[in-house]
Length: 258
Ligand SMILES: NC(=O)c1ccc[n+]([C@@H]2O[C@H](COP(=O)([O-])OP(=O)(O)OC[C@H]3O[C@@H](n4cnc5c(N)ncnc54)[C@H](OP(=O)(O)O)[C@@H]3O)[C@@H](O)[C@H]2O)c1
Image (cartoon, rainbow, N blue to C red):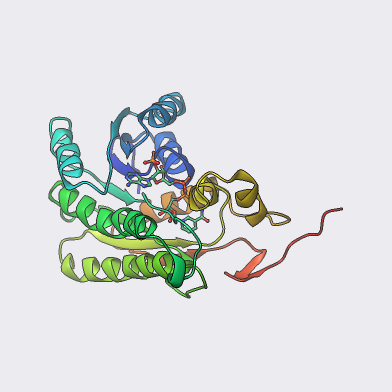
Protein backbone atom coordinates (compact mmCIF):
# COMPACT_ATOMS: atom_id res chain seq x y z
CA UNK A 1 0.00 0.00 0.00
CA UNK A 2 1.04 3.57 -0.63
CA UNK A 3 2.31 5.30 2.52
CA UNK A 4 2.58 8.84 1.16
CA UNK A 5 1.18 11.33 3.66
CA UNK A 6 0.95 8.71 6.44
CA UNK A 7 2.59 9.24 9.84
CA UNK A 8 5.44 6.94 10.94
CA UNK A 9 7.01 6.78 14.42
CA UNK A 10 10.52 5.36 14.74
CA UNK A 11 12.41 4.82 17.99
CA UNK A 12 16.19 4.64 17.95
CA UNK A 13 16.26 6.78 14.80
CA UNK A 14 19.59 8.47 15.58
CA UNK A 15 21.71 5.70 14.02
CA UNK A 16 21.76 2.25 12.42
CA UNK A 17 18.48 0.60 11.39
CA UNK A 18 16.34 3.41 12.81
CA UNK A 19 18.14 6.12 10.83
CA UNK A 20 18.04 4.04 7.65
CA UNK A 21 14.34 3.29 8.19
CA UNK A 22 13.64 7.01 8.64
CA UNK A 23 15.25 7.71 5.27
CA UNK A 24 13.41 4.82 3.59
CA UNK A 25 10.01 6.09 4.85
CA UNK A 26 11.05 9.65 3.94
CA UNK A 27 11.49 8.55 0.31
CA UNK A 28 7.87 7.29 0.47
CA UNK A 29 6.83 10.88 1.38
CA UNK A 30 5.73 9.99 4.92
CA UNK A 31 5.47 12.32 7.93
CA UNK A 32 8.12 11.21 10.44
CA UNK A 33 8.18 11.31 14.24
CA UNK A 34 11.72 10.31 15.22
CA UNK A 35 12.87 9.54 18.75
CA UNK A 36 16.20 8.71 20.43
CA UNK A 37 18.33 10.17 23.24
CA UNK A 38 21.00 11.92 21.12
CA UNK A 39 19.17 14.97 19.79
CA UNK A 40 22.10 16.25 17.68
CA UNK A 41 22.33 12.93 15.83
CA UNK A 42 18.57 12.86 15.35
CA UNK A 43 18.68 16.35 13.86
CA UNK A 44 21.26 15.15 11.31
CA UNK A 45 19.00 12.24 10.34
CA UNK A 46 16.02 14.61 10.20
CA UNK A 47 17.87 16.90 7.77
CA UNK A 48 18.66 13.93 5.50
CA UNK A 49 15.02 12.82 5.64
CA UNK A 50 13.82 16.28 4.59
CA UNK A 51 16.22 16.16 1.63
CA UNK A 52 14.92 12.66 0.81
CA UNK A 53 11.38 13.97 0.45
CA UNK A 54 9.67 13.41 3.83
CA UNK A 55 6.31 15.19 4.16
CA UNK A 56 7.48 16.49 7.54
CA UNK A 57 10.05 15.45 10.17
CA UNK A 58 9.87 15.98 13.94
CA UNK A 59 12.85 14.87 16.03
CA UNK A 60 12.39 14.39 19.79
CA UNK A 61 14.91 13.53 22.50
CA UNK A 62 13.32 10.51 24.16
CA UNK A 63 14.74 7.84 26.44
CA UNK A 64 12.46 4.83 26.00
CA UNK A 65 13.59 3.75 29.46
CA UNK A 66 11.69 6.63 31.05
CA UNK A 67 7.89 6.39 31.10
CA UNK A 68 7.25 10.14 31.48
CA UNK A 69 9.43 10.94 28.43
CA UNK A 70 7.70 8.33 26.29
CA UNK A 71 4.25 9.50 27.35
CA UNK A 72 4.91 13.19 26.72
CA UNK A 73 6.36 12.33 23.31
CA UNK A 74 3.13 10.59 22.27
CA UNK A 75 0.99 13.29 23.90
CA UNK A 76 2.84 16.09 22.07
CA UNK A 77 2.35 14.24 18.78
CA UNK A 78 -1.42 14.51 19.18
CA UNK A 79 -1.10 18.22 18.38
CA UNK A 80 0.17 17.21 14.93
CA UNK A 81 -1.85 14.10 14.10
CA UNK A 82 -4.44 11.72 15.47
CA UNK A 83 -3.41 8.79 13.25
CA UNK A 84 -0.04 7.07 13.17
CA UNK A 85 0.14 4.40 10.51
CA UNK A 86 3.43 2.68 11.39
CA UNK A 87 5.16 2.36 14.76
CA UNK A 88 8.71 1.00 14.45
CA UNK A 89 9.95 -0.18 17.85
CA UNK A 90 13.65 -0.28 17.08
CA UNK A 91 15.46 1.37 20.05
CA UNK A 92 17.73 -1.02 21.87
CA UNK A 93 20.99 -2.88 21.68
CA UNK A 94 23.44 -5.00 23.65
CA UNK A 95 25.68 -3.93 26.53
CA UNK A 96 28.60 -6.23 27.27
CA UNK A 97 29.35 -9.82 26.30
CA UNK A 98 30.12 -11.17 29.75
CA UNK A 99 28.97 -14.47 31.19
CA UNK A 100 26.28 -14.25 33.86
CA UNK A 101 28.89 -14.94 36.54
CA UNK A 102 30.65 -11.62 35.91
CA UNK A 103 28.05 -9.44 34.16
CA UNK A 104 27.14 -5.98 35.49
CA UNK A 105 23.79 -4.77 36.82
CA UNK A 106 24.10 -1.54 34.83
CA UNK A 107 24.37 -3.47 31.55
CA UNK A 108 21.40 -5.70 32.42
CA UNK A 109 19.33 -2.67 33.39
CA UNK A 110 20.13 -0.82 30.16
CA UNK A 111 19.19 -3.85 28.03
CA UNK A 112 15.95 -4.54 29.88
CA UNK A 113 14.93 -0.87 29.86
CA UNK A 114 15.49 -0.26 26.16
CA UNK A 115 14.82 -3.57 24.38
CA UNK A 116 12.03 -4.90 26.61
CA UNK A 117 10.33 -2.36 28.90
CA UNK A 118 10.96 0.42 26.37
CA UNK A 119 9.17 -1.57 23.68
CA UNK A 120 6.22 -2.15 26.00
CA UNK A 121 5.90 1.45 27.18
CA UNK A 122 6.34 2.97 23.71
CA UNK A 123 3.67 0.63 22.35
CA UNK A 124 1.28 1.46 25.21
CA UNK A 125 1.76 5.17 24.61
CA UNK A 126 1.16 5.04 20.84
CA UNK A 127 -1.59 2.39 20.58
CA UNK A 128 -4.38 4.99 20.95
CA UNK A 129 -3.10 6.75 17.81
CA UNK A 130 -3.05 3.65 15.61
CA UNK A 131 -6.16 3.71 13.41
CA UNK A 132 -8.40 0.65 13.37
CA UNK A 133 -9.08 -1.24 10.10
CA UNK A 134 -6.71 0.85 8.02
CA UNK A 135 -3.64 -1.35 7.66
CA UNK A 136 -1.68 0.16 10.59
CA UNK A 137 1.49 -1.57 11.77
CA UNK A 138 3.47 -2.21 14.93
CA UNK A 139 6.84 -3.32 13.62
CA UNK A 140 9.19 -4.54 16.34
CA UNK A 141 12.91 -5.14 15.93
CA UNK A 142 14.06 -8.40 17.45
CA UNK A 143 17.17 -10.40 16.65
CA UNK A 144 18.37 -13.88 15.84
CA UNK A 145 19.61 -13.65 19.47
CA UNK A 146 15.95 -14.06 20.46
CA UNK A 147 15.81 -17.41 18.64
CA UNK A 148 18.99 -19.16 19.86
CA UNK A 149 21.05 -18.08 22.89
CA UNK A 150 24.82 -17.71 22.92
CA UNK A 151 27.47 -17.48 25.64
CA UNK A 152 27.83 -13.99 27.04
CA UNK A 153 24.41 -13.10 25.67
CA UNK A 154 22.13 -14.30 28.48
CA UNK A 155 20.52 -10.92 29.09
CA UNK A 156 20.52 -9.70 25.48
CA UNK A 157 19.19 -13.02 24.16
CA UNK A 158 16.66 -12.95 27.00
CA UNK A 159 15.29 -9.51 26.13
CA UNK A 160 15.13 -10.34 22.44
CA UNK A 161 13.28 -13.60 23.22
CA UNK A 162 10.94 -11.43 25.31
CA UNK A 163 10.46 -9.14 22.30
CA UNK A 164 9.14 -12.14 20.35
CA UNK A 165 6.70 -12.94 23.15
CA UNK A 166 5.53 -9.32 23.32
CA UNK A 167 5.01 -9.35 19.55
CA UNK A 168 2.95 -12.55 19.76
CA UNK A 169 0.89 -11.31 22.71
CA UNK A 170 0.17 -7.97 21.02
CA UNK A 171 -0.97 -9.73 17.84
CA UNK A 172 -3.47 -11.69 19.92
CA UNK A 173 -4.62 -8.64 21.90
CA UNK A 174 -5.13 -6.55 18.75
CA UNK A 175 -6.80 -9.26 16.69
CA UNK A 176 -9.99 -7.80 15.18
CA UNK A 177 -8.68 -4.22 15.09
CA UNK A 178 -6.93 -4.55 11.73
CA UNK A 179 -3.65 -3.46 13.35
CA UNK A 180 -0.78 -5.65 12.18
CA UNK A 181 2.03 -6.71 14.51
CA UNK A 182 5.28 -8.22 13.28
CA UNK A 183 8.92 -8.67 14.18
CA UNK A 184 11.98 -8.30 12.01
CA UNK A 185 14.86 -10.32 13.41
CA UNK A 186 18.26 -9.48 11.90
CA UNK A 187 21.54 -11.28 12.19
CA UNK A 188 24.90 -9.51 12.04
CA UNK A 189 24.60 -5.95 10.74
CA UNK A 190 27.32 -3.31 10.73
CA UNK A 191 25.88 -0.37 12.67
CA UNK A 192 26.92 1.20 15.98
CA UNK A 193 25.63 -1.97 17.68
CA UNK A 194 29.05 -3.47 18.50
CA UNK A 195 30.56 -0.11 19.42
CA UNK A 196 27.79 0.25 22.02
CA UNK A 197 28.11 -3.38 23.13
CA UNK A 198 31.84 -2.89 23.77
CA UNK A 199 31.42 0.53 25.41
CA UNK A 200 33.15 2.50 22.65
CA UNK A 201 36.04 0.07 22.01
CA UNK A 202 36.31 0.59 18.24
CA UNK A 203 39.00 -2.05 17.65
CA UNK A 204 36.96 -4.75 19.40
CA UNK A 205 33.82 -3.69 17.53
CA UNK A 206 35.62 -3.78 14.16
CA UNK A 207 36.77 -7.38 14.84
CA UNK A 208 33.14 -8.54 14.89
CA UNK A 209 32.80 -7.69 11.18
CA UNK A 210 36.32 -8.67 10.07
CA UNK A 211 36.28 -10.57 6.77
CA UNK A 212 32.47 -10.75 6.71
CA UNK A 213 30.03 -9.07 4.38
CA UNK A 214 27.59 -8.08 7.13
CA UNK A 215 24.10 -6.67 6.55
CA UNK A 216 23.91 -2.93 6.08
CA UNK A 217 21.36 -0.83 7.95
CA UNK A 218 19.71 -0.12 4.57
CA UNK A 219 19.10 -3.85 3.97
CA UNK A 220 17.03 -4.03 7.14
CA UNK A 221 15.26 -0.72 6.43
CA UNK A 222 14.25 -1.99 2.99
CA UNK A 223 12.79 -5.13 4.56
CA UNK A 224 10.85 -2.99 7.07
CA UNK A 225 9.44 -0.88 4.27
CA UNK A 226 8.44 -3.99 2.34
CA UNK A 227 6.56 -5.29 5.39
CA UNK A 228 4.85 -1.93 5.94
CA UNK A 229 3.72 -1.61 2.32
CA UNK A 230 1.92 -4.99 2.08
CA UNK A 231 -1.83 -4.66 1.51
CA UNK A 232 -3.88 -4.34 4.74
CA UNK A 233 -5.01 -7.98 4.74
CA UNK A 234 -1.38 -9.24 4.77
CA UNK A 235 0.57 -9.47 8.04
CA UNK A 236 4.20 -10.55 8.01
CA UNK A 237 4.43 -12.07 11.49
CA UNK A 238 8.20 -12.65 11.56
CA UNK A 239 11.06 -11.98 9.22
CA UNK A 240 14.57 -13.34 9.87
CA UNK A 241 17.23 -11.57 7.80
CA UNK A 242 20.90 -12.53 7.96
CA UNK A 243 24.05 -11.99 5.93
CA UNK A 244 24.72 -14.84 3.52
CA UNK A 245 28.04 -15.26 5.34
CA UNK A 246 26.23 -15.99 8.60
CA UNK A 247 24.55 -19.42 8.78
CA UNK A 248 23.96 -19.09 12.54
CA UNK A 249 25.11 -16.69 15.27
CA UNK A 250 28.33 -18.67 15.78
CA UNK A 251 28.78 -19.99 12.21
CA UNK A 252 30.21 -17.12 10.19
CA UNK A 253 32.28 -17.42 7.04
CA UNK A 254 35.22 -15.00 7.21
CA UNK A 255 37.45 -14.19 4.26
CA UNK A 256 41.05 -14.28 5.35
CA UNK A 257 43.04 -11.07 4.98
CA UNK A 258 46.79 -10.94 4.48
N1 LIG B 1 23.28 -4.51 14.40
C1 LIG B 1 22.97 -5.76 14.64
O1 LIG B 1 23.79 -6.68 14.38
C2 LIG B 1 21.61 -6.11 15.18
C3 LIG B 1 21.14 -7.40 14.96
C4 LIG B 1 19.89 -7.74 15.43
C5 LIG B 1 19.13 -6.81 16.10
N2 LIG B 1 19.59 -5.56 16.33
C6 LIG B 1 18.72 -4.62 17.02
O2 LIG B 1 18.40 -3.57 16.14
C7 LIG B 1 18.03 -2.40 16.87
C8 LIG B 1 18.81 -1.22 16.31
O3 LIG B 1 20.20 -1.45 16.51
P1 LIG B 1 21.31 -0.97 15.49
O4 LIG B 1 22.02 -2.15 15.01
O5 LIG B 1 20.76 -0.03 14.51
O6 LIG B 1 22.32 -0.25 16.51
P2 LIG B 1 22.69 1.29 16.78
O7 LIG B 1 23.26 1.89 15.55
O8 LIG B 1 23.48 1.29 18.03
O9 LIG B 1 21.25 1.97 17.04
C9 LIG B 1 20.56 1.81 18.24
C10 LIG B 1 19.54 2.92 18.35
O10 LIG B 1 18.77 2.73 19.56
C11 LIG B 1 18.73 3.93 20.27
N3 LIG B 1 18.56 3.69 21.69
C12 LIG B 1 19.26 2.84 22.48
N4 LIG B 1 18.82 2.93 23.75
C13 LIG B 1 17.82 3.84 23.75
C14 LIG B 1 16.99 4.38 24.76
N5 LIG B 1 17.09 4.01 26.04
N6 LIG B 1 16.07 5.32 24.41
C15 LIG B 1 15.95 5.73 23.14
N7 LIG B 1 16.72 5.25 22.13
C16 LIG B 1 17.65 4.33 22.45
C17 LIG B 1 20.04 4.64 19.92
O11 LIG B 1 19.89 6.04 20.05
P3 LIG B 1 20.49 6.97 21.22
O12 LIG B 1 21.77 6.35 21.67
O13 LIG B 1 20.66 8.29 20.53
O14 LIG B 1 19.43 6.99 22.25
C18 LIG B 1 20.17 4.28 18.46
O15 LIG B 1 19.44 5.19 17.66
C19 LIG B 1 18.31 -2.73 18.33
O16 LIG B 1 17.10 -3.09 18.94
C20 LIG B 1 19.25 -3.93 18.25
O17 LIG B 1 19.18 -4.73 19.40
C21 LIG B 1 20.83 -5.18 15.86
